[in-house]
Length: 162
Image (tube, rainbow, N blue to C red; front, side, top):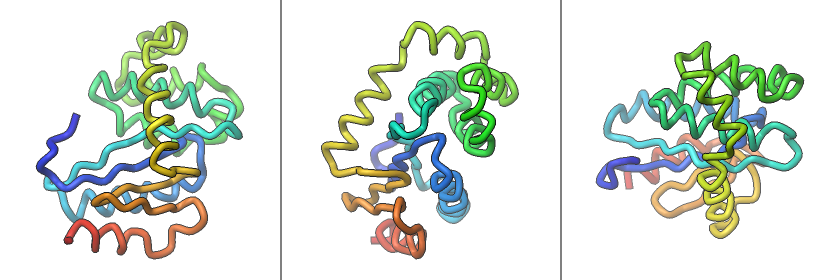
């Protein structure tokens, strides 16, 4: 969980979305600019068009539980094509490569322990109008990066600086 007193960016993401991979540059730049004074929270919004997006979200939830969530997220987004071809075994492999307990990720994908987490994010996303990825929520404003990411980072910085 995040410190509610810090400025916060919700990053609504499908881990198999090429636009979300591109958006990582903005997320990294925001973290670099604001450092520990900014909380960036990954919110899961797997799209049906990506066959393994939901399992990727579940695996990421387990990686976050183990304290290596962002490392896992970045690694999955860097290997979109591999995950699309290979599914859960590739997710487990990526988990192990970034220091997550791969056996635990494999078990989590089988037992569904993070389904409620992912389902809750999806339901909340739909309720606030998220339609695609990447989408950001900053200072109560929803910014859709699914159509174009041009100027989004600057807009996020403006909202954070209030």
